[in-house]
Length: 301
Image 1 (cartoon, helix red, strand yellow):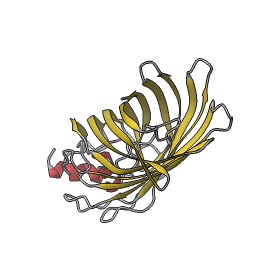
Image 2 (cartoon, one colour):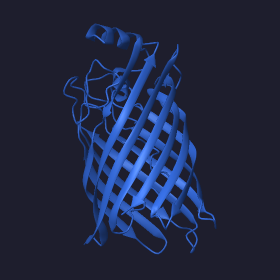
Image 3 (tube, helix red, strand yellow):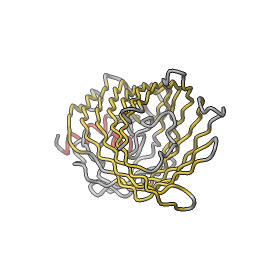
Image 4 (tube, one colour):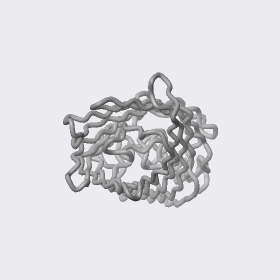
């Protein structure tokens, strides 16, 4: 796609601002930064005990419309799909820091993005290794009826990005992500759980466009019940906001809200768990609206 065509597309995009197009470049799943809301779900704020863990997230996002700053759908057919296999490696050490279990993690996403926006004349597909996340600080606290987590890490601009390619796998900027969350068990047997996990993202300047996306904050939550069979069922959702306008770009803060369900089961003999979730976005401003399907495989080593 030439630069002239891209400029023409942005002129015709109407209610979807240049800032929102910048969000689409890299991942239509994310609210405004790098983190994809809804990928953790039930007990998302629980740090496991000391050990080495792998979590594989297979996520598929079907976008059915583009929304303007009023939350209204833009005209014409504007669809997209994003499929990602996200590989997360976690090491929780036997060391203590601030009376919490100390750990670290890394995330390596593989992604395929396909955009078909009639309103902007965009028909583009890209795939490859997306931006990688590294965190040297993961802290987990555990009480009799509660858990808490704090973390800090950096999304690197390792994925391929081009300002003339809306389906770029990378975002073209780095993001510092701060994590804070908690989980509460209302009953002594811990069959019920209520969790909330927040992510605050601070972005750097995008080199090609000179745009600095505004800071964003999201909270994903889950309410779950573990049955006698070991099956865990829950209601999950997320609320995400871009808190400030992007610098050097037209105003237009991204906002996303989703609601869904999740089921999970853990096999102690295999030291492995599997979760499946579905989330539908019911309110979106300045961005894509769609449905998220997720499978999560957890393996304890």
